[in-house]
Length: 203
Image (cartoon, rainbow, N blue to C red; front, side, top):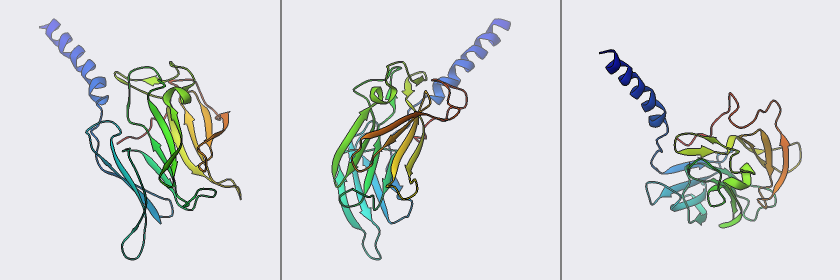
């Protein structure tokens, strides 16, 4: 009887992490600019991955005005209206799908910057991690981003887009070009897998 109980406890212990690691199926997603004046609607064409369509709209009193369409789906999008230096004024940041495996890869999308219906710049998970093992891994997926601050204003300067990596680097991007313009160690940052690391919310 004792060995049966021990076996059951062991199986329950293993089942916890496996269940928590299940990849959620794609579903339509809407991201709204902080001002509420424009938004992006992303619709998947498959249950998993990035296949689908994302359309950007400016809110109006009557029918909303479509500003652009992109041939991809994301369950995590950031959008900003009236972005300085961006033609059409609307900046879109697309994050990639759940990264499968346990190492950063040049073939896995981490994030991409878009504007006026076109891609400006994209970064793989290896670009962000800087080395394949600089990740936080679960049973079947991994992450290279600890937290996303999003669009940030610093006084009178144009907005930048900022995130923090798993190993505590604060990366700053120019939304108008998608270029990486800054990388510093975040205050109080630890290494990969540090306690208290905030995982990106994909739900």
